[in-house]
Length: 114
Image (cartoon, rainbow, N blue to C red):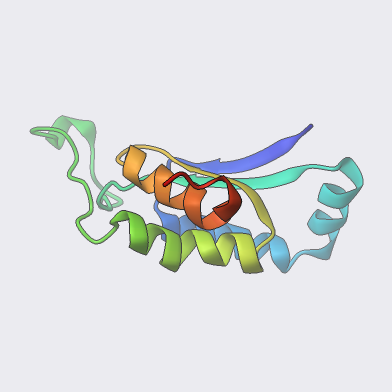
């Protein structure tokens, strides 16, 4: 099985990339003919300025406070899976086990544990 995944980027950037794919029939045809699955796993890091450099860093990058598990699912993952043909989802930097548990429960309710 082949998968093409967008990872370790802001969820907004991943959404933009996935929308571009949906607008390109040639890319969609190639994905379909190859059987490739689309996937996404965003990070929860705060955006960095385009002119930022590691030399300027004085500590670890902050995590976004606005991307709790419910918002990650409702604002991003649900759109990716329902509207943008994403079949593989997860999380990268700053996405917690709580995020993944909610994703699993929402995407696979029959597997949810009580």
